[in-house]
Amino acid sequence: MSDIQKKIGRQIEENSIILYMKGSKEEPRCGFSAQLVTILNSYGVDYKTVDVLLDPETRQGIKDYSQWPTLPQLYVKGNFIGGCDICTDMHLNGELGKILKQDAKG
Image (cartoon, rainbow, N blue to C red; front, side, top):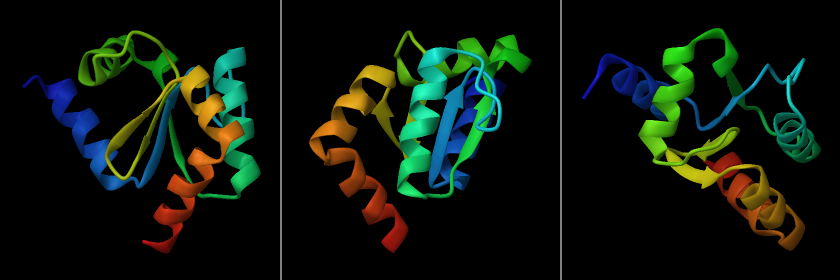
């Protein structure tokens, strides 16, 4: 396992909700990232973001880690939830809220 894969694994393990995105939750740098930030903010949960634009190695590394080709990518309790489309669908049908509420309970 490469160093970047180990680093990403640690980040996912250490943060119960983490979003790999373009930009930050304070300043999203693409529409898909902004959409996921808006969705997560609507739940009032605490989450960490990693700006993949700051490090090309992380940008490719997270795609390799998840075997998912696009960004953003959401992880909850170490599990890959999905990208923008999947998370939006889950939000609209209530699944995402259930996952995030389970996380809030610990």
